[in-house]
Length: 227
Image (cartoon, rainbow, N blue to C red; front, top):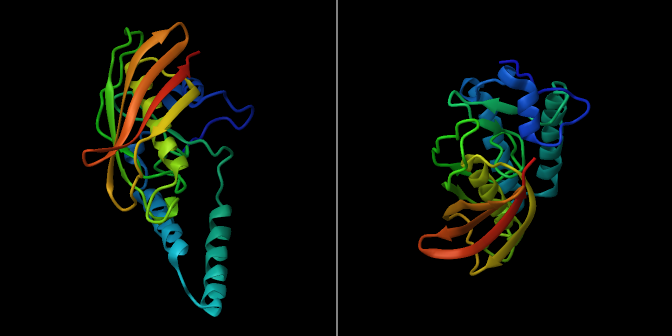
């Protein structure tokens, strides 16, 4: 499936602005070739495996050469813009390549949100709670056996921003305050919950937390600036 990734110059100030420019030309992500998502899953597994490998220097040299060949093949087919947006049938726009939860970015944590109905255009903002789920791997290692605080902050930033978008008041992150309550384990199901609380002019406010089981690992408050 050939995908229109949008104009190459100049880059719009936000994914939302790009989506407005592209309108109905955005492809439905459910129609994307499944091999695209398979590639990302394979690369995520590769990165996690590379963190803990203890292969011999000779084996590593062979692997380096094989990976370089794959990289060269991927570079032969490049879009003009790294940003890739899709529009779902319910109207929701998905940024597939951003590094917070992009399903086509292997650097992004595999953060999947529960279904939430997008707001109707022009409707009044409503308080919406969103829930995301993920499992962090060795690729997200911080202290031994635990996740790096930066990736935990990323999960919160992404989920708080999604909450404001689903409330009908999307904006760019102006600031986020994270309080770490306990360590965040790897290889453990995590739940990231966030809700839009209120607006003050162009400022949108949201709160959220990361949990594993009943344990709160981190809490956050975010401010987002609307256009």
